[in-house]
Length: 82
Image (cartoon, rainbow, N blue to C red; front, side):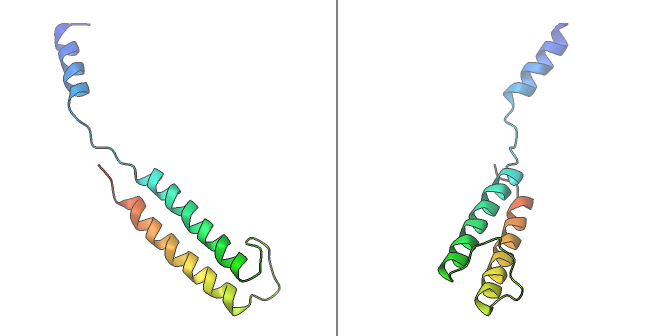
């Protein structure tokens, strides 16, 4: 390895790089949303993930809240963090 290549490598390693944690933050956010959905279902006396022939209004409200939370997660995924 010649001196120019070594100097370029060391310079690139020393310069702080921007870190994009969008996908990681997205996964953490979705986990939180799903935890809240499970709590919402449990509070209503149902089990999250079990299909019912017809959803009661309380479960529809839980699903609407879950959708809003997931939409917020999508915005987090697109925003890079430093």
